[in-house]
Length: 168
Image 1 (cartoon, helix red, strand yellow):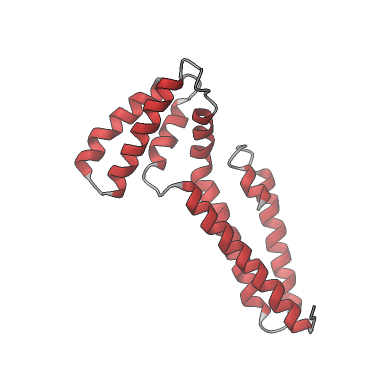
Image 2: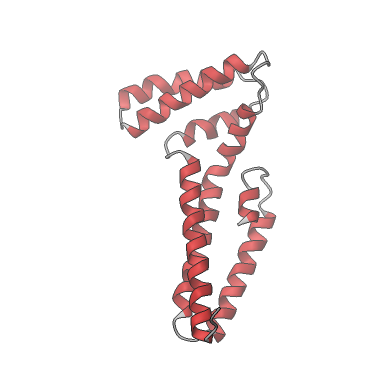
């Protein structure tokens, strides 16, 4: 999970891919030697890890771009532009949530222009932030995926302890 979380800060996919490969290898090992009943829990751990990785793959670039916005101090002259951009992004997201095509057409250029006024934000980052408004807020989505993964891992451990007759 830490390797996937790093994608929200650093674009290097190497550690996340290595972690996934290790997880797949561990799953194969569990599948080979596990007693009946553990395969489903192990498969759920892999599935929830894939959900976390897919979410990061889809949304991490926008999260890194948002971090550029978050790094602007309120004492920075660019702060007013950041504030306008955040409000414009919120309105654009609202137009997607409400499925209001007219509002979306009106809000998109406003948000794009507001983001274009922020120093240090590349066009690719602007595009990612605009695209990200089509999806639910990231923080609750990440929390939901992390919770599902934690539950799956806990259930795997609990089932393994039961199968092995370990009580404590």
